Length: 195
Length: 324
Image 1: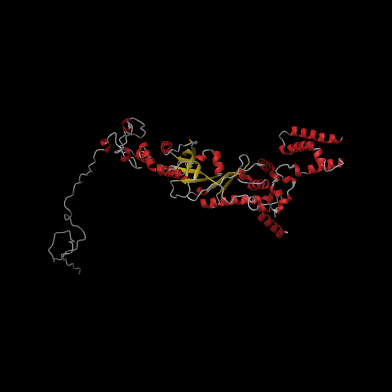
Image 2: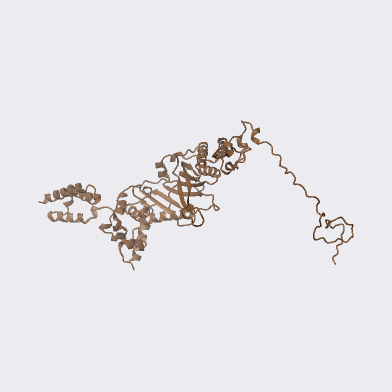
């Protein structure tokens, strides 16, 4: 049986079972307290009602297309291709980034057996390129990505990061704004049951 | 005794001299000398297929390249009208010291070429697919507008590998990010929400991040994140019975109105005055000053410590000077 210290309470029990004094985390109160203090009395902005019927276009705040390969010349040619495509389709990239290449190196024996004096150095280089786009609709993004992915050269890997925008669901309304009479009666009945 | 009756339908089996129909054929297991195909035949001349001259010699300079090279294929030296070379020549002995030409150049065939993606190709292709693109709505031109209308940012990743399988388990991860100001809270709910969120809440940006990667599919993780968000929100509005046990140590900030310091101060003032009810109104200014300085001492901690403590000291002296 572990001692019922504050530390253990956090990790052993479910969050609803932990008393608030333990939740306040005296052992690391500095960071939690600072965090709690900062967000005090920040007024919430009123939410506009947005209708997003089923089948409506998605909205991408940002699209990041990262390509990786072993041959920098192929990546350069691919960059020229993507630039031309984005000019034609009216979606100028915000930024084209060239992160530094990554080298994986091994030093292995040259011979199958013995001959410890003779080694060989091997290396594999991965070159990167990132295309950043902003404010694309779902259909534009899908069209662009499909064209660009169909023409991806051999031996090149692509990673697509999409940041989509969505509203909150309609059920996320504060309980106080809904009919208060029912909630108070529920609370009373709960309290009666508990006591 | 074996006997073969040769009929008209049967093929001739013996290689020896032709015998008449009905004659008994002798079984020959080995060939006798001279009974083979005759004297040794000389190796014939190999006949090579007639190769016409390369196509690029008959190409005009104003042809449509998009028709010559419509799709991605291996490099064909007879079709490309350019004098391309590839290869390193280390000495004058190799290839007479000249650059290695494109004829039968394996290196040129191995590398990916972009001859199917010239600017003319791209223009043609994009003209055909442009109709599937839609414009970005003008109302969402700024980051603030995006945040106002559509507060949640959902990040997902797609991976394209040239591996035998098209699956990548990293694609299941879904990340939700939004600012808490977009949701409606009262003071208790906001405080509880931040406590429940823990490290997932970034106080500097007032942003909550939920990363869902428990489930194997992206849709499942998306649904789980939505559920988490809903649960967090409604749990923060509930007040549990054990929340009454909050002590002064659990307050997120120093509330002077609930603090023992206020009760003690009022007791002291009431004890000295004759009319206990008017204590607050008479000494309002001094109480306010005391309240401000003690709140600053408790809240700001180490920064401005000296200044805050001297202010506090002065306010306390002023309060008691009144009595003295």
